[in-house]
Image 1: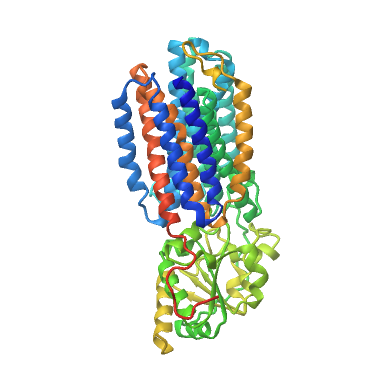
Image 2: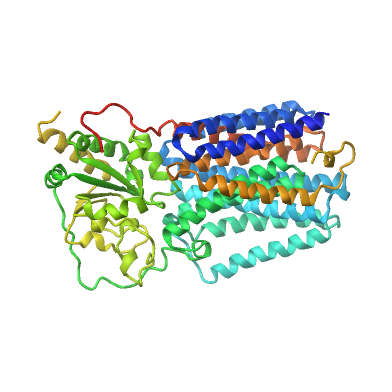
Length: 469
Length: 112
């Protein structure tokens, strides 16, 4: 009877989760999705807790309370830190899966070896490999994003890197197969931790060669891994709710990763094993190219004359926390009847959708946020393209330069606008270390400085000059 | 799908039933996620993260049942990790979604 109730609650929770994701299809209903998700979660927790096998209630209360104590501050991080928070939560997800898999193995080894069927053992091995590699991999990713000191930001590569990584995974797989064949052998419980260690090491090695520009894809892939480890846990525990919720998470990570890869014209394999950022062309600067710098006053005047301004934000906007100043500029231009749109490249920033969230935080209506494919046909009609901390996503080399590492990547056609203003912190090339032709184009004018200061100056110029209030 | 969960000694799990559920759920997931607005990809990631912390139901059993203490400690850590994801995932998703507005306050003369 009570088992029927538990299963019924699980089915309802599953339905609520599907609705939660369904409602994310538009911002208008998205918050309803959160409530559905919370309802499903509470129901599932309550139903499980009420199971008669659960007797140590204080243990559960203590762990839940600790989760709340850590979880609430993690939900209050500044929005620029959302990528690392997300990576951290993938780490927690992987850890939970890995630990439950480990616990179940030793439990069954000790108390019911008959439970260690081949199928379950395969599921346990998959669960702990995915879980623990997601744990360390995501911790590394979070560390890189947070710019933790002892974690190298730039991709780290060494000879035979891929061979080493694949070799490590292969050893883990071989040990795993041995365990599947002899789960109850006397050496098994001592061999099990070997897989854990290998998975932990593999996670670190997988992320070390990956640079910041690839983080959106990597976070999406880690998301898929975290989901799949939950699915494997569902197979281990014979729990269909876990299988379903894990599959939803896994497919979400997969779709996001595919979108990110397409937006960079690269494959998964290339992202994970390509060590982007190291393979820069060695084409040394033949002739010294010259930037044309523009003054704030000049830029302000050109902006005032415009009918249509397109702002192209990138990671630099996040770093400089410039989104609120951008909003002030938006207000100033709107006040003059100038149309302002924001062109969002799918991989701008450090995670999928990163720019949208920052601009929404600055109270910019989401109806003015336009996707790359939508804005590109209109770019020739754009009077001013204002590039705020974006680089590779507006680099025309992606269209023309066959030798460029970003060749073939779809870009926002900033170079087709009538005038381009590019705000840039320094004269150094961008993250990928690739020269950007856009900056040397006839119609491009550089505004050197911190994005927040430059835009702040522009706002001052516009609000002071024209007599409009 | 309930009869596989008979009481007493663990019955053989319905392997094909599980795989069936996995495949169907993946198709539902792909169908639903494909239609999620690109604006919301960051909140999508945090809400799916919270949802996949449903791993908490596994951790509750491992922590709360009368198992050896070592096992339950592993479970408690997993339970803590899952609860952290649930709390922070749902809260931050809602916090981000609250910011998405069509038009914020009436602005003078501003229309696209």
